[in-house]
Length: 259
Image (tube, rainbow, N blue to C red):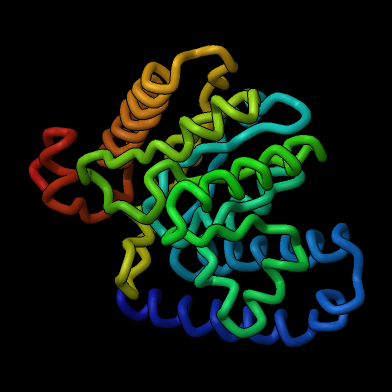
């Protein structure tokens, strides 16, 4: 049954996404940034709705009051594609930091540029980091909520943390608060799989880390807070009525039997 529901969801999600993107082309071409954001919010909301009604996966947000007003850096755990669109329904003015390669995807790249996303050429080393810091400072100055995944890419639940120094550089050079976000989405929307599992995906916004810490102390605190809270969310999921399958690494990390 999980396979059938997953196939139905994937078909519906990508079909609806295609229709919405095509129908929204005039907005992306001629509309304002506010109009583009409204269309994106609608698209993300439809995806969350389809996941709930077809698969039985609910979406819960906790601690959103921890996000301070004005420009801020949002640092979520990254386990699946789900958070790449779900955060559009949670944050008021999100700006994602994303790799430049995504801008080459037809339509999606056009949207990313129109919506003011921050594109990074990762192979340019320190030059890319300087450009990134300047772009993030500009977005912060416009009271945007800059979303950057501290590990740079999706990591399966239970994987060893791999936090990059880029987030510490942005913390130090922008002087903006950083809000850690714990996530358990990878249990229900596994990366590189077609299966979607019923249950409850939780995003938990933790208290912001205010400016002023040395870079290493900041990175250690960020990792500790996100990993501790994400492990707690995995334990919570293991005790729920709809317990998703746990990858062996996740089961070992929170001392489960892996069933």
